[in-house]
Length: 400
Image 1 (cartoon, rainbow, N blue to C red):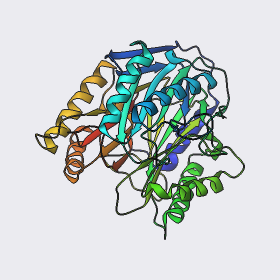
Image 2 (cartoon, rainbow, N blue to C red):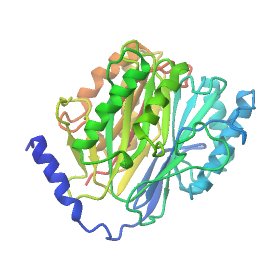
Image 3 (cartoon, rainbow, N blue to C red):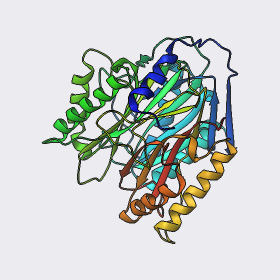
């Protein structure tokens, strides 16, 4: 039965007083591990740590390595340091998101991941090709790790010692046990990138208010912007938005959109709520629901499934590529006891108009129009492969 929005919000928040102390078995299950990464990682009963996007900087906050291979080695050294300072270790790593300058850098990153991990406890991975805030950087990364619950009541943002990108920015955020809320990318017009960023943040703040959450509950922000060389206009507005607070983990991707200059998505934490289903779809006031993406997905599950991004050869055409990608995703989801009805977040990277059109055609044939995932679709320079034009990155929960 379809609920009106005000009834839906009542349904969610009535459950805030439930007992969240019940024991949940903790586990990290790695699905179909390959030589360098797993097809998916299933996390149950753990607290998640989300990192900010970080770069191959040395202790002086500068990029000193001038070759792609040296920068890739540095990024993994920084990854080890970041995990340690966040209170995690290599075995806790569940997802790595790489931002690379070229397919060659992607290959170097996969090779170095194999060396760094020793072929054990392999995370899920994703790649996108993008220019980065550091013009001289060939690679950047952010990660999700999973640790034993610490009994926190609210998100805890932290700063690591050593290299930093921007002051006032958290390097990582530990997320308390409870619910997660995925807010699809929002985009507003503005006279320039800075004004568009300000207007978009104001829109997101209104959404937070309708969800009865605050800025302190935000655990990740991802910006899709154009052009990257003006990223400082984005960070300036984000600083204003958060005032004296540490900015939560932040990542940037350059998209090639010729329309709106920026789209911003968020992940938000909430205390555990009681719900019959593990997913609640919310359409905030003033917005319309789409059959292929939800404006907000409220996740009420002790288990999260992080899939590696899937891409394929586009030489047989964009439609065949999209069909192949989603066929693989369906098989991986099934191995994780999930399906397309239990997706909570999708990120689509497309590097051609044909790939974008093929994605638009296939989604309605696969998704339940009443509960599609929260999503962002970004037109980008490349997906990190010489032959692919579509990459799909998913987060899901299990079937009940």
